[in-house]
Amino acid sequence: MRYSFQAEIYKIGINWTVDVPLEITEKLSVKKGYIRIKGTINGFAFNKSLVPVKEAPYRLFVNLIMMKGAKTAIGQRATFCIEQDTSDPEKEYPMPNQLAEQLKENQLEETFNNLTFSRRKEIVRYLSFIKTEKTFQRNIEKVIAQLKEIKKTS
View 1 (cartoon, rainbow, N blue to C red):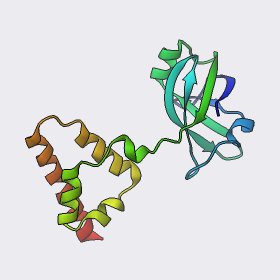
View 2 (view 1 turned 45 degrees about the vertical axis):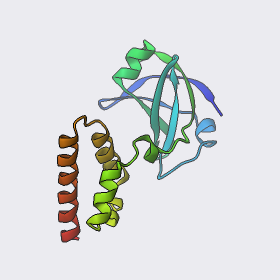
View 3 (view 1 turned 90 degrees about the horizontal axis):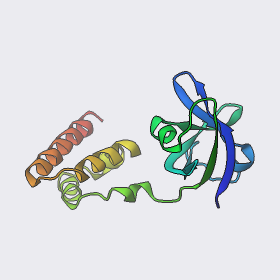
């Protein structure tokens, strides 16, 4: 379900942000404290996470790309339309078969799975952009070497 609201963009420290109304956030699912959403700001599309704030509404941090795309600025009111992002972030960048084979061959599957989600995603994302087979293999070897070190020290 999509929810719309208007909010003034303000600055906290070096970050631009808006507060998302409680009547919206209480209808969304929280995972590890955060709420993954997709939506628009003045019609400009984005994917973000709402961030919890102690004894305050969830915050949506607004970056420069969003501000330019929405043609807005600090101190201005913007129209937001948001909804829960139910896509599986693990499927955004599928694990390459070669990496899966190397993890299994070297008995490093558990070590890889014990990395934080963001670290696993970053490794797989990086590998997905490599164009040459030689570079791809070299980077898989680097990942395997790093995982062997992690396994050895744990």
